[in-house]
Image (cartoon, rainbow, N blue to C red; front, side, top):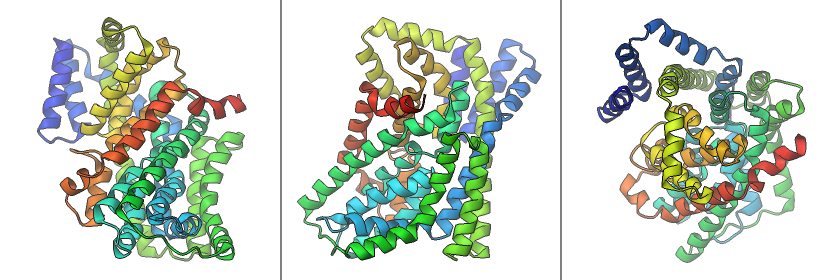
Length: 425
């Protein structure tokens, strides 16, 4: 009865339009009262949930991403990608995917990727004769690279929720899956562009390509500093995030000279708002997870799954379907914190490494950011492109299929997520 009350109140809160963090908090408080547990235990769980040193890296990563979006780094990465692959038929679609792979690997945010690159590329694509739905769909789906390719603050949330998983190993585990997903998306974007007869762009020459690469190096170095500092052991995740934010300030003010005071204030405000939302979610989800453990939800789920099938292939397929459906209706950060303690024991019993599950979780929930009814990236992309969501969804299925194909490969072929971590162990 207590478990039904917990999930029932949570579901009612979401249906009524309550923010996820508040719905989690309401369900948790009522659950504690129903079980007769002292509320101070819940407050202890709330405080312990956010009193994790690794979580300090999240505001630094978010701030660095906002600075790069405001300071002109995104525009230079787009020019670099356009010089490298824009000559192909329908090349701007491939440029869009390549830009997302570069910028997403720096900002670590799918929504920031959609907003920054969409504002630059979607108007240009429409001006060059590309249909608005195509431009929006490529921008939205390729933004998933931001949560898979490191550095990703969502991976830090997973490491905290999983309890002891190495953030540096998680970062490196996401590199090959992120590249694989972008390659498949780029192929789909190219095929559709050719079928629709979109034009290519003139190749600017190797000299211009080299110049644009040199200009983009300071921006690209942000990701190198953050990820390289962690992997080398020179810095902790938090220290690398702080250094990355400092580097972003130096690059955007001294090198590119586009970070004005107004843009700096806008970056600070956006970073504070996003950080507050994430930390509030972490706090309430930690107390919610305490009740899930009390009700033995992971054990009950494991038993339920084995009753359906004992075939690992079927179990993993059902797991992916469940995560995809949940990602369509809930916030990504909340799902990471709730689903990790529930599903991680199930996959580890099947012999899956937590690193591989972390990447699978990122890809599943990243796709949820691109799907209705609550996909944040889809909403942002449609606003930037000036089209209705219904218009975008009608032609977005091939791009969904590309992400799902990459997801299935990562799920059933451990090589993609485990090869690089195995080299550093």
